[in-house]
Length: 285
Ligand SMILES: Cc1cc2nc3c(=O)[nH]c(=O)nc-3n(C[C@H](O)[C@H](O)[C@H](O)COP(=O)(O)OP(=O)(O)OC[C@H]3O[C@@H](n4cnc5c(N)ncnc54)[C@H](O)[C@@H]3O)c2cc1C
Image 1: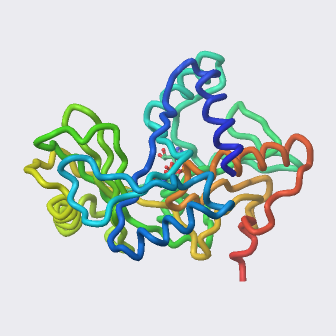
Image 2 (image 1 turned 180 degrees about the vertical axis):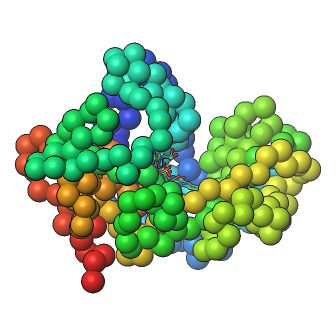
């Protein structure tokens, strides 16, 4: 999975001519001496040493923690909005992108293909994400267990620097004294938008770990299209002919999608076997 990720995002940057993949070490803050010892032991193990820096580092100024921190290696950040804009623009320029709401009632399935308006194809792939998970798509897909998440951006008294600090919640320095803080988890209120309870939870976290004043600038909510058994849903729709599903990324879309999309594309082109554990059919009783 890591190999595909490290190959695909830079290839997409080359293809679009835009930068959206930024290496960024993740700093794990220890809550106890025991956690620190565990890190040192793990960082010496061949399975973990490529990902965990063996030395214990001191924390940036203004971060409150008594037991130091460890730096994770091979980590990075995808600026998703920038990536999507770059991909859209490149596909549009080549005449391969149309932006409109897909209307399932206009889809005609016949023999071994589909027809949608003037378009004809062997199949259609639904990537409707959270909308399907919340049953807002006409296409019924079973197995989802959606999870709501919220984030805030804060203006800090002092700049955090180029840091992604993880200690229960994450805090990412965005420059200009701003930081992104998240994320929360909830299994209800999907359509209610940002909530005062989760805002308070995130602000309480900042007060706990940040030695300085801050002001909340923005507050957003979204829904993770998670699946009951925590595996994606990728493969033919159990009932609808010539309809395929690519969904169920939960909270790990950036990590998993390059590997999973490559598997699906290779299945269509070369007959490579699909990943059995991801097939939507498993959710049909
Ligand atoms: C607070 C929060 C933090 C998260 N943090 C991370 C993280 O750190 N790393 C990570 O990898 N993931 C993270 N996630 C999860 C990630 O956002 C999702 O896994 C990802 O967005 C799923 O992508 P998707 O394209 O499958 O679905 P979506 O992002 O839901 O996108 C589906 C798209 O399809 C469009 N659509 C739906 N139906 C139709 C239709 N009929 N016609 C046309 N368009 C349609 C929708 O408008 C939408 O644009 C987080 C999620 C939340 C809420």
